[in-house]
Image 1: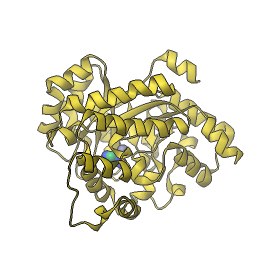
Image 2: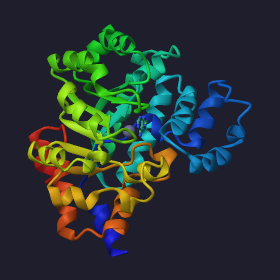
Image 3: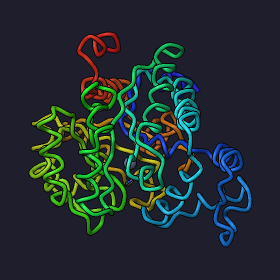
Length: 336
Ligand code: ADE
Ligand code: ZN
């Protein structure tokens, strides 16, 4: 349809994609076989890639998804595996009209199973360089810390010499906070974010996905974040919504993810119109595209179907995404 073509041609920036969440069942099974990784025998979901894909249609919550997400990444061992994974994502992103991608990864989830940080970053970095060269997509790597693990674990990871080096040399430019949200309020990670801020890193955090709007206030006040990942619960607090709009803090909204993980009943329930009316800046993103059955363009189309944005509103959304990116002003100028 003409609108699909219009949405595809818009110069899109993606700000919320976990590279581990781009692991398709096909690639998962292929790498598990190559690396002699045994997938859980007792769970019929792991009988075949098709069975796994069907199971992905029945997620009941964030934690129900996360158990599959963490098992899936057990197939990733070598740098080449991480490179193949990220390259798979960048090809989808390119086909969908992404010009700039700020991508997450979860260092602790790999180091905890004895895959070194250097192995992970080397593979992802190689794919990023290839994406820039062959697809013209600019990229930024952001390391997310896992909130379900002890705070001391995140601090130990942050201070690891290889992690510090990746921050020093600019391979990794930001930090985020992800995994199980409920009962893990942002303020637990205040020290980590203070240290990251001192290092001059960009700061974002998941907040207000499954958790309440109070976690958004918490993350803004205690972590000093300049962006909010998800943030759909912001609409529950009009005062805070006004403040977020005034401070031009961007939300990285993931509509299909919110439906699949049952944070909302349908994309209509994602407060897109409230954000537009309040002047809250947001981008539209895929989160974990291989698990949720949609890449970025599917998310744009779902939002259009549910909220019927005008051409002008779509241009506003796209411009906010470019302006809210962490790339150079020069790069923003090329996309605007
Ligand atoms: N890790 C990967 N996807 C996530 C999500 N949607 N929320 C929290 N942690 C995640
Ligand atoms: Zn996420």
